Length: 334
Image 1 (tube, rainbow, N blue to C red):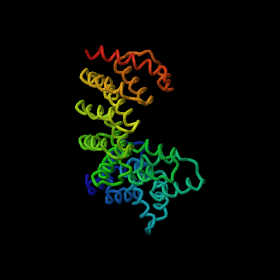
Image 2 (image 1 turned 45 degrees about the vertical axis):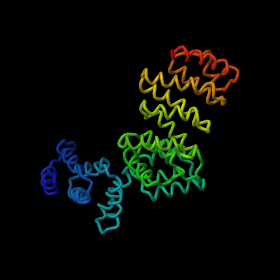
Image 3 (image 1 turned 180 degrees about the vertical axis):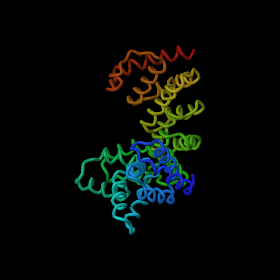
Image 4 (image 1 turned 90 degrees about the vertical axis):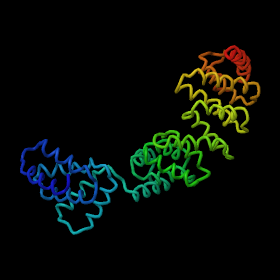
């Protein structure tokens, strides 16, 4: 509805005196369909004219507006203007109840955390993940002056920004920005993977060849989440040839991640072929434990070793299980 239509309906509904009215509520729903400033102006105009019952409804309805950032700064500007004392108090109440924190307050909050004046890091995380400040959230994640645990918590909740986060991170990659953090960026995009699926997969494939082991590592993990069966050749290559231990391990695990999504027999065969080649060559016991664990999961076989022995990197038991795994794979691939 345009504002003239809203004003006409307001004048009718404002005549109602009962405490609870569906007509008033329906009017409020129409009023908050737009968060543009002229609708916010109309909202305050109606608030000033409303009877005591309607005024309460109109005040509460500000909490349900979508663009809380615009609403907040609109109200801040209103408080600086020459308005009636009554409206000033109403706006203060609305602003204080609005589920929104300004960027300035976030910056002050972080500064107090840095100085040890506050220890509510998780409250900060839960608040900023609901905020519109995607770039500021991202900058905190890559800020190495913050402690690692806090940064991990911030990182784990970055995906809550959803489409805005995905757009922001894709722009970073398109502009080739933050080279040393591209591993973290692709890891976040792998968790989002909604709007830009094709681009995310292409960047993931590209980063598996990064000169930075950390970036390759993250890309190989993500590949296990989002890859297609044709990409298993990338996993096999890195499982057999990558110089970095973790990259070899997460390549081996990638087959298992794919298996969790789709119990595909072609995938199972490709995984077993890769493991059959890798087991005789691999010398690192962490990588071997990941390969054995993956075979156990995909093949639903025990291989004579417990999860505890794999987690503890029990060398003797891993060596015995490795022989059993080779025999098992050989039979499966006949």
